[in-house]
Every structure is written in C-alpha cells, then in structure tokens.
Length: 106
Length: 122
Image 1 (cartoon, each protein chain N blue to C red):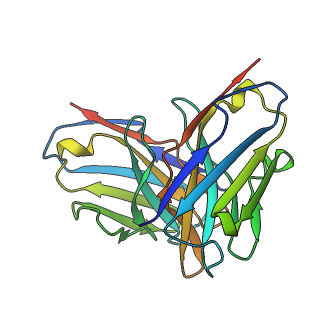
Image 2: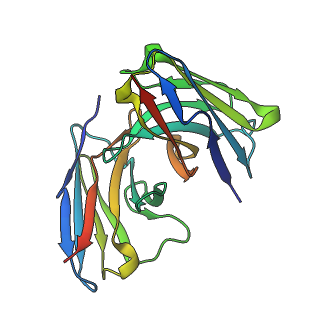
Image 3: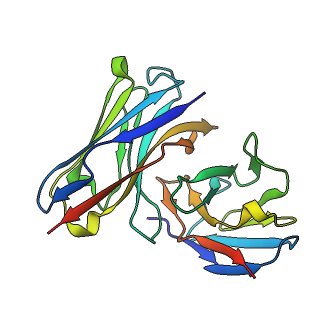
C-alpha cells in the first residue's frame, strides 16, 4: 500500500498569507495526485488533479506542484473562504488519502 | 450537471450488514471511462477509500476491507450499491459516493455526494 503523509497537520494563517501544504508519498506516484478542500459537515471538493491541473471553477490562487514522492499545494493569497481542511490523495496505485491539513485563522 | 446522493440506514447494530445506495444523475455508468467509488470518513479522522466500479463492471476493493465489501451497479436505475458485512462500532463514519473520471487512464474522484452518517451501535 502507498502511504500519504501531509505536513503540517494544522496551519495557522492570516488573510492574504501565502500558504503551502506538503504531501509525501511512500513510493513514487508519478504525477497521479489530487488535492481536495473540505469544510465542516461538507463533502470534499476537488481543487487539483494530476498534481498541477486546476479543476474547472477553482480560483487561480490555488496551485499544485511536484512529482514522484513530494508534492505541494499553494494558496497564493489566503481568502476568508479558504479556511478549511485540505486532503491529498494518490491514484497511481489504488487510492489512498493523506491525513488532512487544517488551515485555521491565526 | 453531475449530482450524487447516498441513502441508507443511519443506525445499524454490530454484526449486521450495511447496504448503502448511491443514486446519481448527469452521467451514465454505461459510458466508457466512467466510474463510481465509495469513500468513508470516521468523525474527525481521515478519508478512506473503500471500493469502486467502472462502466464495464470492473471492480476494485480496499485490500484491508475486501472480504467485507461488495459493490454492484444498476445502470437502468442510475444506482450503485455498496454492502458492508459484519459491521462494528469502528465502522461508524460518513460514507460518500463519488463520480470518477480519468486522465491518461488514471482515475480520480471529481464529484462527490453529500455523504451519509452511519452509526454502529454495540
């Protein structure tokens, strides 16, 4: 099984901050990685697929990068609507998720 | 517009079998390249993929739960059904179904249902 590890688990930030979340895979997953945003009581919402492709309708302040085993999600200027939990997920070999990163108000 | 909705019991007892139905619209599970998967999330914990089914009736199951899971589809009703046998309190979670699409043959979840909370009592 491929394990996905996100860091940090919690991130405190202010509106306007540049935020970066890291996701590491236990073995190479090429670029088969997705990022999701989840708000309390709601289903996850796809932000990024194939490591760096922006899903239709997602604001351009979200971007993804990486390949192999190390990936990042960047929010260029944090907005009030962005306080949420973010999950990475590999789909190179079956499907596994990271443990999530909560972005909270500083 | 793709939508999915999960339905089933909100409370089950230990050792019972859980049957969940995903009813969807905006796509057909007989169309090449389409899939539907199930994912769960225990309260306050991480997401866990359970099972998925493709348009051609191909199926995949989580290795850790494979012996307890069955996924089927009814294309005429636009439904996918997941059964989980021998339920335990640790199976308490919100269960989601999701539409799957692919890039270069690698499938990911792009549209999710709202989820349904299932509580298992001992």
